[in-house]
Length: 189
Ligand SMILES: [Mg+2]
Ligand SMILES: [Zn+2]
Image 1 (cartoon, rainbow, N blue to C red):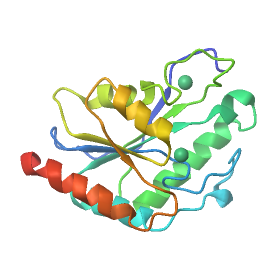
Image 2 (cartoon, rainbow, N blue to C red; image 1 turned 135 degrees about the vertical axis):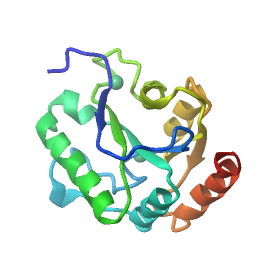
Image 3 (cartoon, rainbow, N blue to C red; image 1 turned 45 degrees about the vertical axis):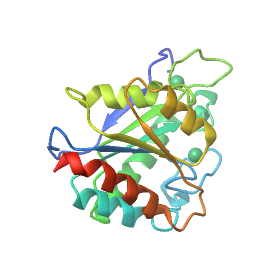
Image 4 (cartoon, rainbow, N blue to C red; image 1 turned 90 degrees about the vertical axis):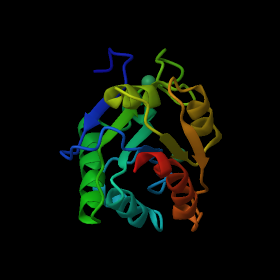
């Protein structure tokens, strides 16, 4: 199954974003939803407080949203790829129902010991995969994540990516992102 060292990129949105629309990439586990080992069914998806509201705000501003996530449970066989995609589809559906829009999910399914991929964070491959999928020109990009390895991936990314570190219990989740959006949208509009 995992004979490739490439990340898995899935596009969920049908919206035509403006070519200069900023991109906000989120880590998944303990950034948007509660981190649970080998999460393989939709009943186990628990959104952290304020996240869906933040995604609605971003959609209202025409900002493109993606997820970049390490899921080594796939390569270990603890989560079947099919179940993983069901969870991803469900996450995209939740965002849509909250009047947000999820453009894409980039996933590293690899194991850090067994596989020699370039996408497992703190490597920047997932972020590069997402930015190269849209970049004809330089747009502002932020990566929102809870861990130091997320921030390291942002620093190592090919394009300029602003790392925004947010604690899972952070109820001020939206504020950090809103501040960033306020800074970058000066040029955008
Ligand atoms: Mg995380
Ligand atoms: Zn990988």
